[in-house]
Image (cartoon, rainbow, N blue to C red):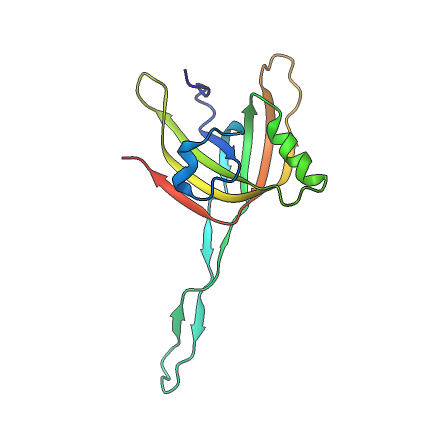
Length: 161
């Protein structure tokens, strides 16, 4: 049975320890997970480098430069455990090198077995930068998260056909 049946939560995130590459994500069990209504910041920006070529007076030659990655922001989420907070707390208390790899999956409606997750982004060496707890609601049964922000050092896209 799928853990994320709620249609309001369109994105699932799983964190892994040291998978070292997108090809290994499916082979290991996540150490913490959550589902979120909003996900922003899955972006990579390449800084172009202009080179002036001697003898050419018409424009500059453009070359690929350094790639930087945006801060991923997950909003309005739920998690079954407090592991995402524990990770933030661990790093905040001095374990600066404790990085996790992440898989952000778009949830759709698939077959009768549950939700289809054929679009995924794999993020390497994630580091949490902000954790915001949601308001307390007596009727909620899950641990609610308002926001989780994290940075990372690389990303890959996977689309299952």
